[in-house]
Image 1 (tube, rainbow, N blue to C red):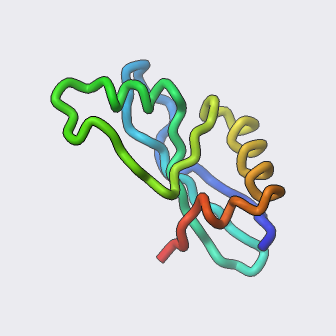
Image 2: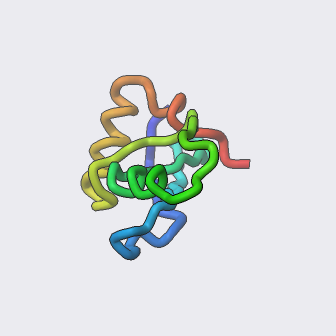
Image 3: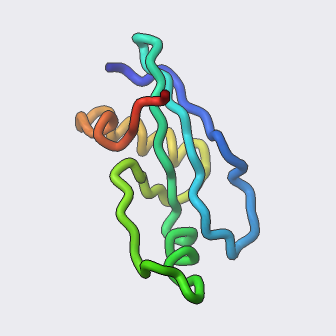
Length: 95
């Protein structure tokens, strides 16, 4: 399946200490839509550094880590995953 477009579902501009992820929706040439969560290394570190976090780790099969939420970084990452055949594994159907 070929990726046609994607969009941020959440606000990407946030305080430096923000820890939550950003969701994206992807649209494919057959009209299907899928979603994934994006984390930057900084936000992931902020999340795992929160006092009292339990459990002190996480597993998310549809998480993509990007250098930044800059459109170009996200686009290049999604296109790379697509070219490697990993984009469907890194996303979930939108229901």
